[in-house]
Length: 191
Length: 390
Image (cartoon, rainbow over all chains, first blue to last red):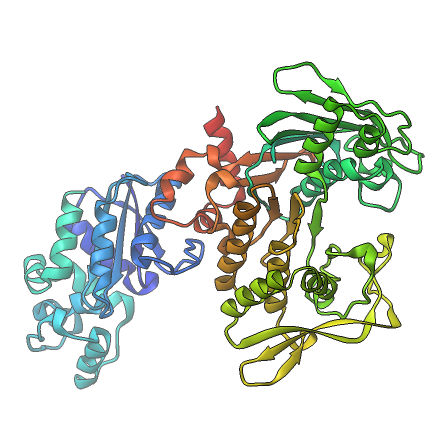
């Protein structure tokens, strides 16, 4: 199965998202990544439900390009409507029927990387405390950076997130990120 | 109204047939034949009012207007017309012979729906038009046909707006009463003519204009040194300054100040030009507009199309055909009002009505038409239409 994976930060998140996807669905090995903001996927007006339209446009494009399925992850970025719009796109089959797993990360992808302190500690080589509820952190990237700074470490780039994604406890991630990860994981498993 | 237009052997239009709606827009890349289609429609309409040597764009050897300069030298233009409950097909054939100074008439026919072609007799083909031919040979059939063709096609106006020309003061010239040239030059006179003819009509125009631009209190026409109308074959040149006085457009603002048209925005003048067309006592039957979006803010385009749709609905006789490169403009149209033009590898033009494309209709549940166009692209859309037709 050839799957298009659309994420907010292609280079930053590709490794970690790919790892999470394959831990949830071992059969998905042929993944091609693209960036949500790819200007070729053009919705020019911003009129109407922007993320709903954007998701449908990505699905149509994936279908035209011969993909068998699409996975799309967007950050909520404190905009509640995105959850509704992406849920609508997940269920909308009138325009496009390609199998899909669409998800909204609350508030940004870095939040998922904070869910399991043991995995983070192992990846950093330094013990950290259990972090606040990830979906309650308004600015997860800044939170992660502050955590590293407190340890005297610099952000380890995409490789760090890939290491965390490889070892984190999926059940714990789902339990601590019920609005974002749990919903997405369910859609991915049933895709 | 022209419900279908067929052109053969004109420029890149080797053999093109397109269904047309009361308001219709042509899209496609540059050099895809959109303007040629408008020119061909203009030529057919002009054949009702003008001699054949005046119906095509002037300049150069007329044979250069042919698709195939080595073969057939006849350009064929055919319109299916519905008007006053009558339907039929009006066809003209024009010979564009290499070396000849001007096009000549091959034939003209009118074919009422379901009947045999009815040649239009020209006692002196070199100097008569449809109108003069029938006026000199009046009978009931002739009068009916002249009226039908006149009502459907007469007085075509082809606009390639140039806001600079719209703003110029104009020397009043009775030969150009209630008209503008293709650039929009003459707007001041046109407004002055409307004011002189019917003050209430002018006030309605002014009120609509001020509703759209609430910062403006009134439109004024002031006498001042002005420009003469360009000669017919110099339409794209700047008119010459004249000693004579003419009329200039001024806008009185709500704050009491008054500004000349030359100081106003392009969009403001373009909206005024469209409203002027809407308020003419007898608007042209066919209006052709190239890229009406030029100089207009995307949000303002809705007002323009609203004005044009009002013109169609109010008059119930005017047809408007336009070209565009603007997805924002396209958002304001239904798929059946849009035709995509495409250049084929052999250099000829093919046309693809978007109304025939089921995928477009499906996508309209989510996207605006302009979004579908820009997202899919011209090539993919044209291919979808072709696939759909199969």
